[in-house]
Amino acid sequence: MMAATPAAAERYLDRFERMASGATAAPWLAGVRRKAIERFAEMGFPTTRQEEWRYTSVAPIASGSFEHPLPQPAGADAGAHAAAVDAAPFGGWGETRLVFVDGLFAPALSRAGRQAQGVTVAPLAAGASERTAGMLAGVAGWTDRPFTALNTALFQDGAVVAVPAGRAVEEPIQIVFHSSGRPVAAHPRCLIVLGKGAQATVVECYSGEEGGVRFVNAVTEIVLEEGASARHYRIQREPLSSCHVGTVEARLGRSATLAGMAVSLGGRLSRVDIVAVLAGEGAACTLDGLYVLKGDQHCDHHTVIDHAAPHGTSRELYKGVLAGRSRGVFDGTVIVRKDAQKTDSRQENRNLLLSSEALVDTKPTLQILADDVRCTHAATIGRMDEQSLFYLRSRGLDPAAARLVLISAFVSDVAGRIGVRPLREGLGALLAEELGGGS
Image (cartoon, rainbow, N blue to C red; front, side):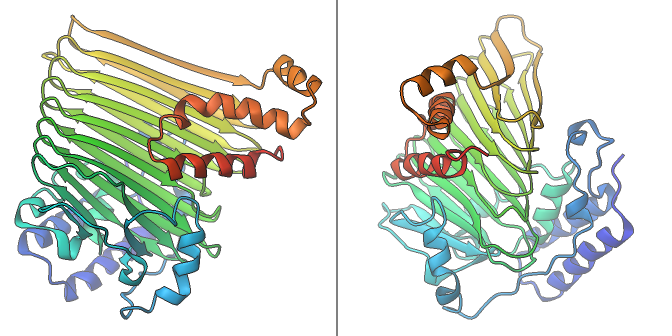
């Protein structure tokens, strides 16, 4: 069973009623919002008594008293946050960039690059067409996911990326969700829709300024129609005072291809759920992940790849580097449905512990209901190889540099798959900064 403390549930219900009283949302969306908040009230926040949450306590979120961000006058955000957004890792590049501060669109910080005819890259309020609006809240299930239900009820803004059939967006599209130093709760939303044969790369970056405890609860929905191809990067590097919950749900049509990557570097408590449903025959999915933790950080990744049609292919590789007293969780499930014959799936989770107090819980799982498939999974947890370390030191490297070389080698097969050069270079510099000194 799920249970929220009465005070926690009451705060969010009151917030919803205040929003609903002044909202101008379409009637269908208002109805979905109402059902979502009612469902959240029934479920409440998850507890460690549930299998899906047994390793992760959300008490800091449930007991936190967060503010509700209010829209600011146009241009009011520029002076206060422009420097912080540009200085944030992975945040200062891109011809096309949508920036949101505390979950609200910041036009003065955003850049509109050139887009092909029919391509939409805009905040939800301005960019949701009749076609895409009908997909909003239609992919990410909220009836059994309390945080998704909470986002569905309370999101104020977000981004929509829509590429019509046959179009290809060459330059990466960057969406930056930046947290101010205020103790706020933000519920950003993204909707990515690629038509038949369309192509695009979307980068979500989550950053923040130092300050009080804040809570980010993000949901991204991805729809890939027949033959569409998408690369989706999700980079989270918020301050250590942050609590972050993220959900990505994707539905792939016939012969569609999704290459997804989740990088988690910041936050005191973070949880990311990624679900990819290969609904069309011949769909292919690659999910890669990297989490680098230190101190008392806690990071939980749950993934589900659902092969619902035959001839599907999936590859999954998650790697973790943990120092201090940090704790990592990986729970990955590959489901092969009864009619999904000729499925080819491989899942791996590899972890490197840099201290005796770091801890990882890993649980790769296969659920195979078909009989003509090829599926494998593997998980490892290990420490830095002392012989390799000694070899590098004998060649003149100091201890910190030797450690960094070995760590870089460990993460290289994940980091090397980042197809956006600023992301790849930024990640390398950040690893050198945070781990090069040996924590």
